[in-house]
Image 1 (cartoon, rainbow, N blue to C red):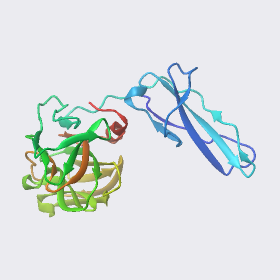
Image 2 (image 1 turned 30 degrees about the vertical axis):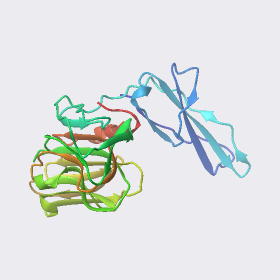
Image 3 (image 1 turned 180 degrees about the horizontal axis):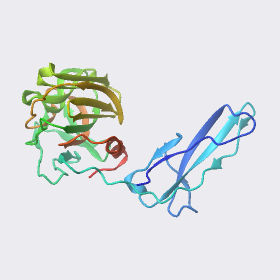
Image 4 (image 1 turned 90 degrees about the vertical axis):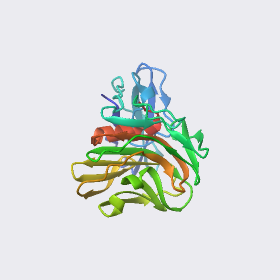
Length: 273
């Protein structure tokens, strides 16, 4: 579908030294254009609520004499947002509550009064270091994807953001950073960036064959080849002293493709199963 858009600077006289962008949206592509809040880059990724609408981009060029008038691109075609990737989905927890949106009835158990408050999409689970959410869902030994929005507020030791280290694999917070490990960390360890006090960070891990990849905010961050990974039984969220929020946790029994990963990252703007 047509949901990813980009604008160029175009051709200007007067030797501009900088450009500014503003995306707009319309119901019919002709009238009622309104600015899209916080969309002032040269590209725009549509969200679920944009389905059937139209976008355009206004460009302002500036030089030593100041800014130009805003010039708009042509309107896009009607937006078609692809369906959220549900093939192979084992569980998806929106974390507005304990429900599993995958249809597989992997309902969470609330241990020691996890609460729910404003998150990345709707509400998120809030952890205080003494509580967690547990499930009967498993991460398979073969290909998989683990995805979560993470908002960590305190440095801790080895906290299991998503997974079950006793079961063999997890997405961890260790000190200030995020990382994925399995087999006690000896087989595979994918080290990510600092996440403490970094706001919402999208963390996603795939296994495709023997290649493990950690994606941060929709972009490949690090990869590593390895042998068999342990089956991870009874996935938990926020286990072992994690402090902060977690939202929109998904597990798939396959490695999502690059376009699907972009879609899942875009879920932070409101796209969910």
